[in-house]
Image (tube, rainbow, N blue to C red; front, side, top):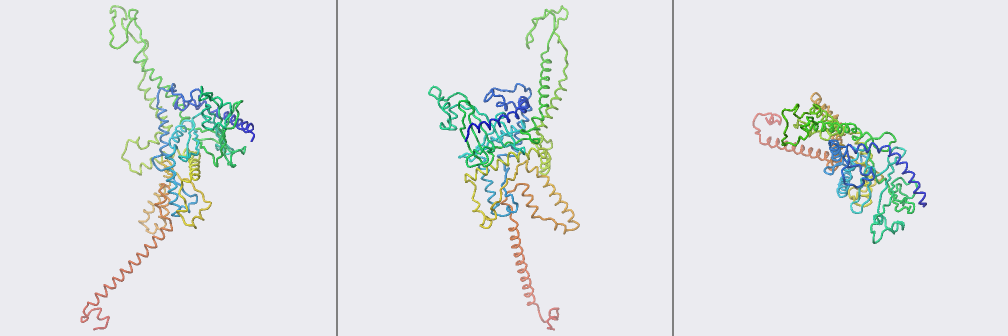
Length: 557
């Protein structure tokens, strides 16, 4: 392995990635200045890990508040830790009908939730949702953890560079990290580091405070250096002239990071058309309007004044007493300029601008119910309102599924299988079913609030068909024979994300109905036999010496 050739190759790739990102940085800084100032630490190098406030451009915090509400709304609506949002299923829908498979998938899903809650996935996911509405791009590295299965690291804005493949999919991640010598020894071990670094740690300087730049690359293994020929490589190397060295190489079966983007045009690397980018003009106008409004109030409450020379020592402190010469001309204090600001008009314009920014960040969508004046709504009305408004986020949600949740849950399943934490499917299905399952794939179905809102249209169509069928049944009852009620239950259960264990398979339903039919036949036969016995008993007690239909039939008379 030629380390110089490998480092040179990835240095060239990194230079290209830096050139691409540079075209986005000015807008990112503008967005963070006016909307999310606490995100810009890594974009401006000298502000890394600094505690001072950086909101010098902000006179009204409404944009920052709306940004945080949008992030919280997305977090709660897409991958909330407090309610189910994913469900494992087989790609082949027919296999999901096997009762044992359903039970196994339900237990796999429960294990997924346990892993997610025990790891740091949810806090790091929330940080991603802070980045996405503002910058349009977020990155999370998902690595193996021997205690919690997975460990997640959400990178700060400006901390990484991305590259895309020929299909426009992000496939490469680059970072430059500053470490002290002591940190390098802790992370990579002395044996993997050059002597120039390990020797810098002394009794007088146990930390080795000299900063060392380490480049971290996660990318497809174009150089064929990953152990066991795995398709993705994670590479750490030092780039200094005197200590250039590769210090760690690891391989992965799939890309160990996710990089969701709000929206991208063809062959673009970073996200665009996100709320922060779209609302930047409105947010700048709001800050300017608020500055002018407060300036007008200051001029109204504490105006510049004019008066005679005798009044040059006048105090404007409330409660102070000023002696004036009542005989002198103009012996009063007057405003220098009468500005008469239209404060009410200015304030209404500010409120209108805030409403525009609120809509830019979809606040009306995430608070569609609580913002309603009429709180007396039925469940159907709530469902309709939420479904209609959440359709506006449909494209962004699809990107969240494709670029965040799908790869993240696939990584989670891979790591869980390697750790052996999932239940053994052989304890759930028969040998014949087990053979049928060979080569079948597992997929993730999403049942979050927002995912269900996207499916609400189909549920409404089912309701319409059933309602129309009931209407026609008043004219022709046989029309309901056209409706497959079993399939309706299956479709509704799939849309609403109902647990698979509560839905019986078609075969089980057939068996139940056959047993019920047999029981009904047996009950009818018993009732007929009882009726016949009752008739015979009654007939035996009838007098035979009277002229009755029975005696005439029997020829007694």
